[in-house]
Amino acid sequence: MSQVMHYPELMVCVLAAGKGKRMRSSLPKVLHPVLGKAMLEHVLHTVEELRPHKIAVVTGDGSDKVRAHIGDLANLEWVIQDKQLGTGHAVRQCESVCTDVEDVMIVCGDTPLLRCETLDALARHHRESGAKVTFLSAVLDDPFGYGRVLRDRDGNIVGIVEERDATDEQKAIREVTSGIYCVKQDVLFTLLAKVGNRNAQGEYYLPDIVPLALDAGMNVQAVHMNDVREIVGVNNRKQLAEAEAILQQRIIEDWQLSGVTIEQPHTVRIEASVRIGMDTVIRAGTQLLGSTVIGDECCVGPYAVIDNCWIDDAVQVHAFSHLQDASVGSDGRIGPFARLRPEAQLDSKVHVGNFVEIKKAVVGEGSKINHLTYIGDATVGAGCNIGAGTITCNYDGANKHQTIIGDDVFVGSNTKFIAPVRVGDGATIGADSIITRDVSPGGLTLSARPDQRHLPNWRRPRKKGG
Ligand code: UD1
Ligand code: MG
Image (tube, rainbow, N blue to C red; front, side, top):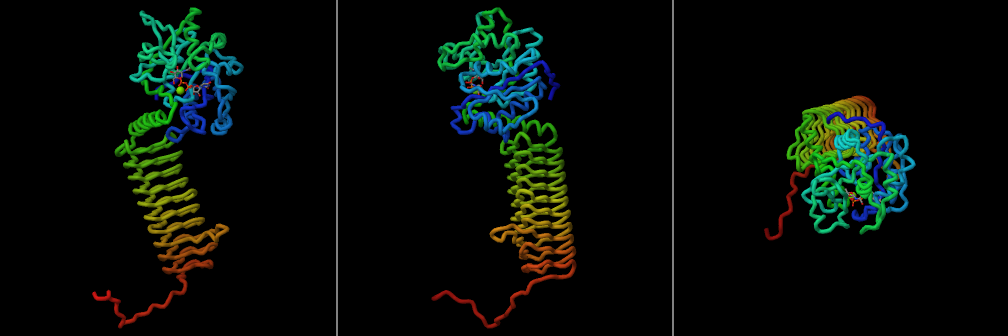
């Protein structure tokens, strides 16, 4: 990422009050996630990189939900727009917080693909050109839905017309405004006060400050964007999926360039907050979600799902394993078909094999739990071997109880621990035992086994007439 300037003289207003009717959702539009992060969070993280004086977020519909999701940050001002009377009206609500700054940048909360380098280019050009109003523009193959930039024969900007107000001739224009503006604070609110609402939607449009500024003889500039895909505004679920696909490609390319091998990248989902170490291989169909962190030299997948987990270096997570809110120490081997549920904490060199479920349990270094087992509400020490079919019976129908297993314990297959129960270091449990009382360290413990009989003259039944 190139160096982005800092802008202590800049106020950023993020418009996020729109109803988002076209989403057809009870969730405010800007809270819809794009690769695991709300659209508005993407925008806020991007503008924060400019280190502006402050960021004002304009909310309206669902403002409680938006505020609860984002939380109160030090340089964030919440501004309420009671009635959604348009983008121009939304910016006017920010007048009292836009003080002590030279410029105001206006960004929409529904453009999650924006990069801070692009905002930096906008703010720089605005400053260097001495313009009163500068906006980002882009030439799109399909400009449908966007405000079109109107120019005269000499190419000078003369205004902006919204899709719904445009004539057929204007609709053919492919240069659009991104909805992102940088405006001198000393003219913004006088221009906005003059904006009317005589248009197809009866709204006060922010883009209408452009012709008003030109009429007043002000310098208005448009900055062309390098990557037009950054301005994709999400207004419906189709655009939400499109934005996600573009961001996914960007994220995958970033990881590839920083030393991660990704097999069949179009089949893989890597959410925005995930971190991956060098020389790790992500195999086909894998999903890395939430705040998952994966170390160096790991191999994950194919078809593994890892949600919000911490995975240390040199770990192998084999096919079809599902890990959630769990941690795996270095050199671990998980799966295939393993399930780590919340609060499973595996120390280094732990092996967890097929059809094993671990929940709320700590497993010590080098222990092996390789087949068909449930370990829940438990502690397993270091160097243990837990046989196939072992079950910690942790739930009595009302309460959960703990199973505590010491170091270097060998548990024979098909053992049940009726919790609460403790097993001392170095103990061996015979196969098919039901352990109801604490087990002393060392020695062999086993529960009574059913008698084994042999009937030498017994014959298998035969099919009638066979
Ligand atoms: C807007 C621009 C259009 C531009 C496009 C780029 C206007 C009138 N149109 O159109 O020129 O090409 O973005 O994506 O500005 N909002 C409020 N309060 C309101 C209305 C909207 O806060 O009263 C917020 C919305 O939450 C949204 C943003 O402003 O985040 C843009 O509004 P939206 O309705 O999506 O405008 P577009 O039709 O996309
Ligand atoms: Mg929009």
